[in-house]
Amino acid sequence: MAENPTGRGYRVEPRNRFFSAVCSITSYENRKPGNMVTFLGEVDLGEVDRVRADWRVDEAPKPTYTAFVIKAVALAVREFPYANRRIFRRGLLLRQRPHAFEQIDAAVLCERDLPEAPMIAFVDMIRDADQQSLDALTQQLRNLASCDATTNTQWRTFVRVIRSLPSWLAAWIIRLPVFFPRMWVQYRGGAFVVSSPAKYGVDVVAATWPWPLGVSFGMVKPRPVVREGQVVVRPTFTVTLNFDRRLMAGAQAARFFHRIVELLETPQALLTDQEIPPQPAEPSGPAGTNPEGLTGN
Image 1 (cartoon, rainbow, N blue to C red):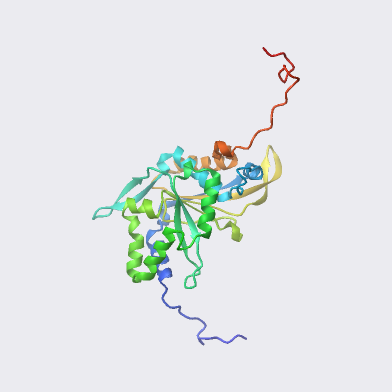
Image 2: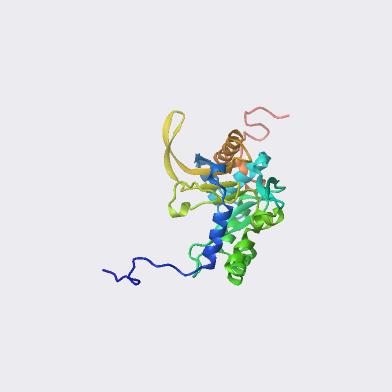
């Protein structure tokens, strides 16, 4: 039997600046469960996989599923402006006011593994996500996955604040964007955050986030679905929308969520002109005739 190092069956870990900072965000900023509603839907990814299989954009890597989700959410936000808002507390009495965003920025959670904080994550933004191509979104996601303090300003600032200031002061500074719209745009992005632990085998995610819109998705795998009265196997994932019902009621949120699913299941609307694969040439008849064999004018 392994020897118990403390003799008590437990140990209290020493104070950790990163742990304190993360707790300050989740405890103070996460939306109250009573204000949040969660929708879940299964998405047929057959067309998305077809686009990925046919990808021929300058030999670029095929776009990730996260890129498709970010683009779909961003376009849905553009179509439904009431979703592009948050509630913030203003003035000495901290009255709640809507804060509408003028652009569509996607917040993305990036995991990090530091010696003193193996559970840490930070957030960075993809600006004007609705105007980005799938190729550009995929490249930015790859950059975020591999960045460090020398290449990413957001991560460098986050680490510097936590390591150089007392824990109470660092936590207070990290929470400032809640009260100042300009700081929110700079350090938190816009109305929505996208996350996915799918690569770790998670099927469904239902969470409450500091953002008024939280979009998550799980594993992509073959599942039985019904199409035209027949059970067929299709690649699917479950997408989750967590939204602040103070900003939109159930019917408005349902239309917004339906549009996200629709865009993912018909992803041609997500492609730029440069990303649309070339179509096969129409068969032509003998010279001087059209395909139907009729003499042209």
